[in-house]
Image (cartoon, rainbow, N blue to C red; front, side):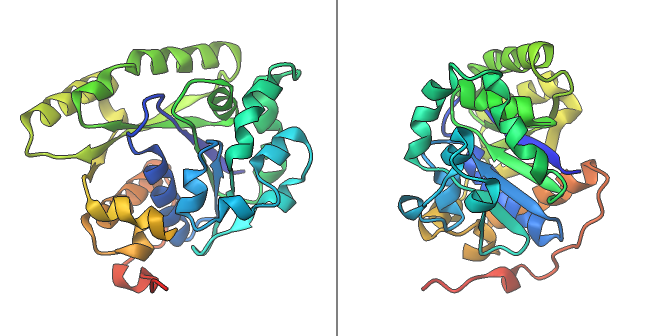
Length: 271
């Protein structure tokens, strides 16, 4: 039975998609069967894993609408053991269409039932909002992973997110837990960043991962080539940080894994 992790934060630009693409890639490379789910109409997780969004015959929208089976929607990626349920702009209308559906907040959960025995971990990349698509992700998930940028504005809206989690636990998914908090775009030289980090640790305690994801140019460049950072620039600081995050994630889940000893071997030649 797989563990489902929703990667969510209603604030945009905090590294949700970057974390989903790279955490999923490293966990898969460490020997786990992984599925990434893109429920953001922008489809950035899909393109970040090399999926050509405009050429998709079926996307997760067609799974929501019942027009396709999961076997028709799932795509393999260039990363061994990593598949994806891709998204594109078609999904933009799903939120409106779901309004009149019975148990509309549980549509994704129902669609994932036959997949839970096929994968060890399922990571869901959520849109930067707390709308019906994100609620579907939280209803389906066992836990939520929250990327938070190491800046003052990252704290704004955090109480709203926690309230959404509280309401989801109360009304939709009583077993939902906080998997952890990942500090992203981190610059330890800044007193303000360190102050924000201290505030987040005070609030979340041991839920905060010890690994912090630094600001790294290569992390921003990799998606334009449709590659996770481990394939694009495996020895960059961003790649090293996400490898460490994947290891910490698996250790926290008491899961054995294959250690990656040679990052350079993961590089994929750019065509």
